Length: 204
Length: 204
Ligand SMILES: [Zn+2]
Ligand SMILES: [Zn+2]
Image (tube, rainbow over all chains, first blue to last red; front, side):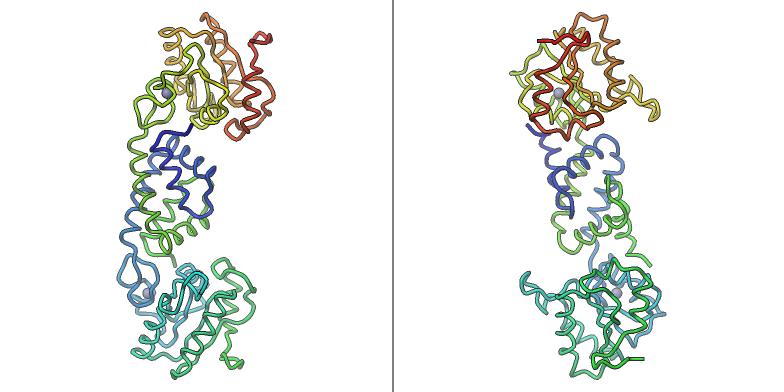
C-alpha cells in the first residue's frame, strides 16, 4: 500500500533535496498538499524558472540569471585583486564580511580525482586567460581549508607561478576541516586582513 | 549582499517546506543549481502537477488525484466497518499493517478551537450522511492519542450515539502523545486486534 501514484511521485521528487529522506519527503508532501498549496505552486514555478534561467556570470563564473553578477557589474570594485573561491556560497560569505572590495573567480568545485573533477572542470584555463587579458596585482586563493581545497590551492600556486602576480592565501585562523560558508564574519574579516604570501612573508 | 534575485527567490520559496530554515534552503538551492538541475526540474514539474491535480477521494476524503482512492475503489474491502483517521498518512500507516480490511473516513485534521478548526472542516456531516446511506456495523475511531485527537473522538462518539452502530477505538497500547503515522506496524496491529467499545467492554 502506498499513496496515489502522483503523490508517490511527488514524495520521490522531494528526495532530490539534500538531507531529505523518505520520512521527511512524505511529511513535506503531506504538508504542502494539506496546508500550503499556494506555497507549493510558488515553489514549483520558481524552481522551474531557476533551473532554466540561472547560469553563470560570464566574468567570474558564479551562479546568476544575469550576464554579469552584481560584483562584476559594479563600477566600484578594485580590479587589481582577484579572490578565487570554490562556490557561490563562499563568495557570498566573503562579500558579507564587507572586508573585501576586489573581484572574484568561482571554481564551482575543487580538484577531486575520486569524483573525476580535474582542472578542466574548474575553469583554470579561463582564469589564466583572464589574468593575461586583464593583469592584476594579487590573486587571493580562498579555497576551503580542507584537503581538497588545499590541494586545489597548491595546484593553482604552481599554475600561476610563471605570471607576474602575487599569490596569497587567507590567514590561518580559519579552522581546519571547516566549511568557509558557515564561518562568522569576524573570523573571515581577520583572515582577509592577515593574508600571507605563499613565500611565508606577510603580504602587507 | 545577496545572491541574484532569482536565486534569492528560490531560497525563499524553499522555505515553505516544513523544517527548512534559511541555511537549509540556501544549501538546497546551491545543491540543485550546482549539481542536480535534472532533479530540480523533475521536482518543479511534479510539484506543479500535484498541486493542481491532487484532490480528495469522493468517498473517504483522503488525498488522491483520482475520483476514488485505491481502498475505496477496491472490490475486496469489508463494507461493514469504517475507520476514522485524522490524516492520509495515518490511513497509510494503518494500511501498511495489513491488519485491517474495512474502509476509511479521513477527517483531514482534528477539532482545534485555537486553530479555528470545527466540525464543519472535518466532514462530520459527510460522515453522518454516509453512515445513513450505507449503514455499517462498526465505526473505529482511530484519531491520534493526543489531546485534540481524543477530543475529536469524544465529539464523534456523541454525534454517532443516535445511530445504530457500534463505535470502538483502538486499544490502549498506542503511546499517549504519540503520532500514529510514526508507530511501528506491530504496535498498530495489536491496537487493532484489542480495540474496545466505548462502553469499556471488549468488542470481540
Ligand atoms: Zn561575476
Ligand atoms: Zn477513498
